[in-house]
Structure formats: C-alpha cells, structure tokens
Length: 288
Image (cartoon, rainbow, N blue to C red; front, side):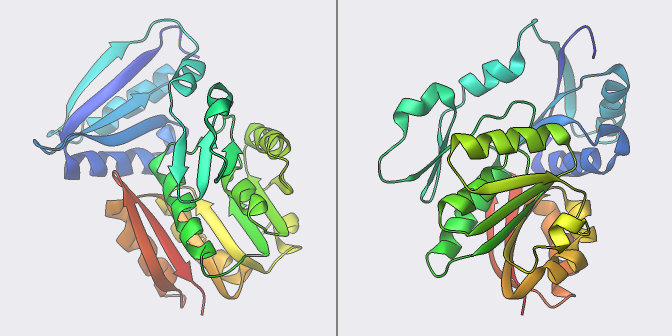
C-alpha cells in the first residue's frame, strides 16, 4: 500500500473520458483499480474520471493510460489520512431502483415500509447499489419482475451480493452468486444473513465451475462485471440459461455496448431492453 493516498482526476469531453475509462478497464496493470466516471458539467459537456491508486506501479499505469488522451486535463491531489471507504459510504444516500431500496447501516431508519429494503455493507467488495451499473441491474430486474418470476438465479461476479439477495428477497427459490475474490464471497454471505435472504455465495471463476454447472439451468443470469469478460462469457451464459431465460449484463460503458451486444446476438440472444445511467449501460437479453 502506498504511504500517501492520492486521487487522480481527469476532465474532458465525454468521448475522450469514455475511451480513457475503457482503456483503464482493458489494461492488466489497472484491472483492480477503483475509479468512477461521471458527467460533471452538462452545459459544457465536461466529464470526469476519479481514480484512486493504491500502489506506485498502479499510479504509473493510470498516468500512462490517461496520457494517451490529450483532450483530458489530468491532475493529482493528495488525500488526507482517513478511512476513505468508511467516510465515502457514510456520506452516500440510500438508493431507490424500482421496488428496491438499498441502504447502509447509517441509514437503516430511512427504509420505507412499501419497498424491498436491502441493507448492503460493502466492506472491501464492490456493489453498494450506488454505482450506475448496479442501479441499472436492479432497475432492469424490477422491470422483468412485473411480468414473470425467476425461480433460479445466478449472479456472476457478485461483489457484495446485492443482486442475488434482491432475487432471493423477491421470490427466487434458488439464488447463487460467484466471485473470484474470497473477501467478496465472505461479505456477500454476511449481507445475505443481514437481509435474512436465502442466497448463497461461492468462490468460482466464470461459469464452468462445478458449483455453477451442478445447479443449472438458470432462469436469470446477472453479470455486472466488465465488457471484455462479458464478451468472453457469451457462450457460457447461453449454456447456463434455460430456454427463454434472461441475462442482465452491465459493467460496461455506453461506448462498449455495441461490442458486447454483438457477441450475444451472434449466439441467438435477443435484446429486450437497454438502460443508461451516467456513462454506463445495462443490457437485458433473452435466450430464444
């Protein structure tokens, strides 16, 4: 861990910011990077990337990637010594996505009586519900639930477990999440207990693990990861789904959705809906 915490900020036009974010996603040296991308000034078309490197090599890799985009203005700021995860989570408001209300311990008294209330504690895992991709997945799921139920659900790259927990809390008899990170698996199982949800989480890579194969086919597969692995998993997700099953895909920028969609359409999937939030896209696909 770096002795001095820093934040790297890049500002510029949307197309340049999205291209830089995609480059950060694709670079192996920044695959574990924590960053965000958002619209900072709508009137002037200004977008912003905030990146938080934890090691000097990661910082160097970020600066090298951002340096390939001359339209971005890049600055580095020192962060005071603090528990930034705790501070950031304590300052986040609850999130409403359709019937779902996602909150942390600091907002437990604000949960409405007429929503599906999900208490999610992030720890070191991704997916509090505030990120545009997680909100997109919950909103897409809410829309699907208006027409049908999903008895068997799989969440690939589960993070905090919020999506599988949402499924378990809305009637799915079987809801399982997988992640390659053992810390995420532990946190997801803790969140399932907090929510009295019958979801379980296991450590697994992709959809070829024995635990995933043994419980397929699924009526719905969530995959809120990154664009390159979404493309790579198109065939495996198709095999894991029951005929007529749905896939909700996110973790991709709007600029990446055409590439991801093409990988699934070529395998027979049909696009049912797409949702956009900030720079992020969520795709709802159906297996024929």
